[in-house]
Image 1 (cartoon, one colour):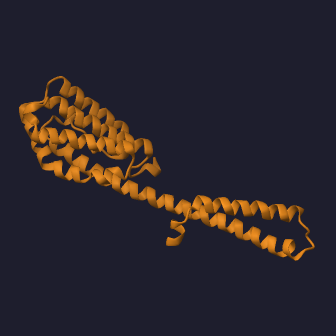
Image 2 (cartoon, rainbow, N blue to C red):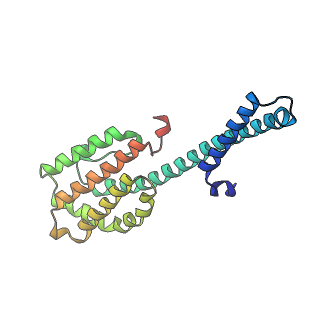
Image 3 (cartoon, helix red, strand yellow):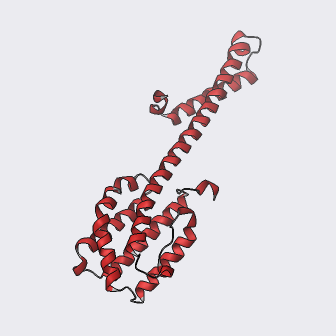
Length: 211
C-alpha cells in the first residue's frame, strides 16, 4: 500500500467522483440498448463506489493510527512532567502537591496547579524547597530538552508550552542567582498547565476516547 500513500488522494477522490457522476448520467439518460451503457457503465459505477468505500476505510484506519501515535507521544511527555512534579515538590505539604496528573483528570490538574501557584504567591516556598526544585531542574534539563522534537509532533500549543518549560527549567538550573526563582517556578507550572490544556482540548491523552 506504499504506492497509495504517495499519490495525491484528494485528486484521486476528485476524479473518482467525476467519473461516478459521468457514469450516473450515462446510466440515467444513455441508450440502454447499447453494449456500453448496458454493460460497461453499471460495472464502472460499481468500481467507483467500491473505490470510494476503500478510500473511506483507508482514511479512517490511517487517522486512527495517527491519533494513537500522537497519544503515545503525549503519554511519554506527560510521564516526564509527572516525574518532574513529583520530585520537585516532594517537600511540600501533601495538600499543595500536584496529584497523579493524568490527562483524563484535567479539571483536577488545573485546580491543583492553581492552588500551588497561590501557595507560591503567598511566599511559602522555603529555601529547602527551592533548592530541591533547582536540583531537579539540573537533573531533568537535558531529558526535557531532548524531547522537544517529540513535542513538535503534537500541536503547536504543545510545542510552545514544552519549549517554555525547557527555557524556564534551564533558567533555574543555570541562572538561579540572576532570576526571581518564585516567578520562574510559577512560569514552569503555568506552562505545564498549558500543556495539559492543549492535550485536553485536542483529546490527545490516554482515555480520551472513553471520556
